Image (cartoon, rainbow, N blue to C red; front, top):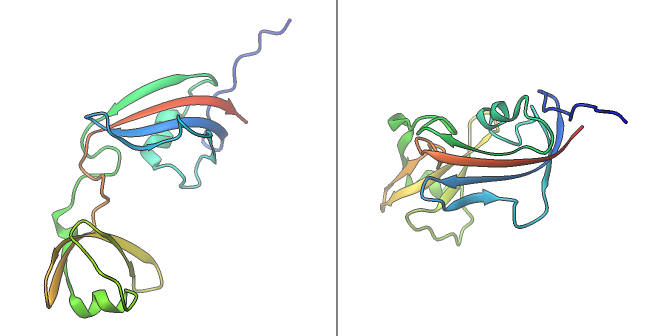
Amino acid sequence: MSNAQPAVVTQSAYLTLHYRLASLDGKDIVTTFNANPATLMLGQGQLAPVLEELLLGLPEGTHRTFNLEPGVGFGPRNPELVRQVSRATLDENSSPDAEYKVGDLVDFAAPGGGRFAGVLRELGEEVCLFDFNHPLAGEPLTFEVKIISVL
């Protein structure tokens, strides 16, 4: 009869878990609870770093809910990330028949070959206004997790 301690989450743990990220009013942003659990390796950017931090040290079998203050999950909103983009730049980054409406998430090529995305706030003939903040920046969030196994 062994009374081995349950495995705990470490910085390089390989986990199988259910998780749910929800707005404070309870609306699910992402959830695995009604489907297959997620399998991920910590430190690989699959979860936001602040969410990974909350998992560290939790034993296998834990089911917990964390309430995150505004801006904790995905950083504070940065007004400097609300930018005007010329219609020409938007067209260069679009397929020829693309049609946009306010609220769309649009992917742009960044200098140096990266990609970044912004939410369309205003669509003008010459200039468009985009918000390049993470859509959840500055929002209070609920993070629920159930750790199924730790390797």
